[in-house]
Picture 1 (cartoon, rainbow, N blue to C red):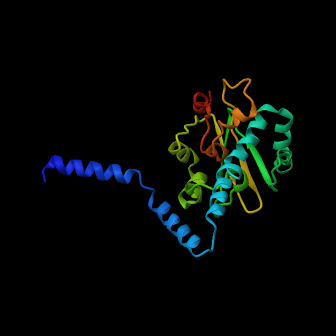
Picture 2 (picture 1 turned 120 degrees about the vertical axis):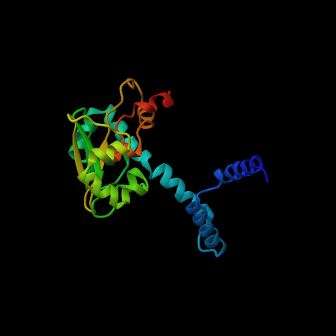
Picture 3 (picture 1 turned 30 degrees about the vertical axis):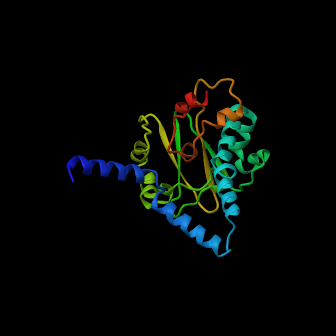
Length: 213
């Protein structure tokens, strides 16, 4: 086999495998298929739960809260005073929730130093990095370094506040509303809000404006 042939085979191999699911996804699908075959779970039920977590229970709920905060000053005040009570106005239930607001002078970041406590009903499933010991330790010890790795560079004039989530208290970060969104309705604004922004590892949401037009 010539070098050209070897390169061609390698390219085809890469192309084929680039379209395959990841190994964890394959294992999950195999386990699901086995459970369905044995009659232990229903495939439609699994699909419904996945859709619920990605659409209804996921970060869209938190994004809706942020969008309402941006357009309704009275709601914003109530959210900062008692977030658990305020979100009931939008049909959500989450006791012991605290909302913290980003400003030009302050950036908030949430971490759970003991485990991975997280407001799942509002933000969906926690990302893997949120549960890793490296993030949990470094977010407290070196928050600027962690934020740099997420592409968030803050000047020395911006105060970083660390909030430690626990089984009793959960947090949601309210990011700053991007400029150029005057007159946008809540649904359009909610489309700009990222899960990471509500954790605090994303700050500037203006990049999403072009895609929302």
